[in-house]
Amino acid sequence: MSEKTIHVNTPSRAYDVHVGHGILDGTGQLVREACGGGVAAVVSDSNVAPLYADRVLASLGAAGYRTALLTFPAGEQNKRLGTLGTLLEGLAQAELSREDVVVALGGGVTGDMAGLAASMYLRGCQVAQVPTSLLAMVDSSVGGKTAVDLEAGKNLAGAFFQPSVVVADVSCLRTLSHELFTDSCGEVLKHGVIADEDLFERVAARPINAPGYSQEELAEVIARNVQIKRDVVDADERERGLRQTLNFGHTLGHAIEAASDFRLGHGTCVATGMCCIARASASLGWCTEETCSRIESAVRAYGLPTDTQLAHDVIFHYATHDKKRHGSTVNVVVPCSIGSVQVRKVTLDQLRTIIDAGCGTA
Ligand code: GLY
Image 1 (tube, rainbow, N blue to C red):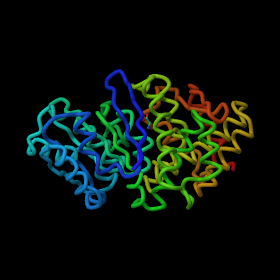
Image 2 (cartoon, helix red, strand yellow):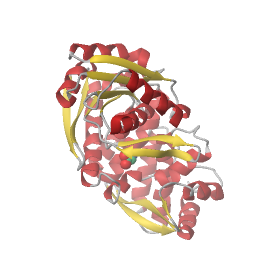
Image 3 (cartoon, rainbow, N blue to C red):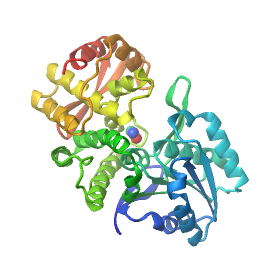
Image 4 (cartoon, rainbow, N blue to C red):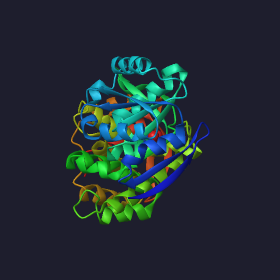
């Protein structure tokens, strides 16, 4: 067992993210130290609960908690107000008080929904995030974004609500399919482009979805991703400025994801969106051709798509019906070089030019 601890210090809460190999059975102790309380309600989905809930419940029990397990059917289609309501009723039936803790055990859907339930229950109890997917480990479990989806779009109802502790055991990734693991690699590459050329070089030269990575090496890469995200959310918890850089690849990527009716994975679409905005940026003189081709080569090395054949009108439609639109402008994140990006406010006409220059042009 090895572990790295990353300290997050946002204005609303300070907490530790523990990243390691074989630390799941220590969850109870870590939650006890960070949260206290007497009851721990584990929230998990129908895929993850059979794999890990028993171990986490045993560990919480050994740390002195009375425990409850609340499960919901797996899938983004269940990240809805109805499921949230059922979870809230479950927390009440388990008789949690405001001092008690919700333990979100699973991927991004579970973390988002359990975090939102914790933010609402009794106007806020505590949440411990125990991510079991790569996406949740490197992105969604850290930074306090919680949400459910509405008919009108993904993540439209939510709250900023920081966890009290995050426990990321990379050995849980062994049960993830190669496809799901690869999908999340889009976010890992994104962190390299926005903030760390060394990380980018390392994971581009030796893709983490290829055989041969040890659990320790993977833990190191994940911990570096968490540090990058930590630096951003410490500086800008509420996404007023710097946190927008985490949306690199997302304006076009999210449009591609929505146009596919969410059949394409989020990280896959982010990877494609990064390549599209990089091509547009190179053609508009915002970055060099070399920066663009390094991003494309890295995405290709993961077996992720570097372009989309969607009609430009369709991409434009979805890109302008996103919650990140501000009236007649959209903030797009463009690469300056590997390790550095910039947020640019563009008009809808300029967005069309970007789509024309970057999409379907590989
Ligand atoms: N996933 C982007 C953020 O947490 O801001």
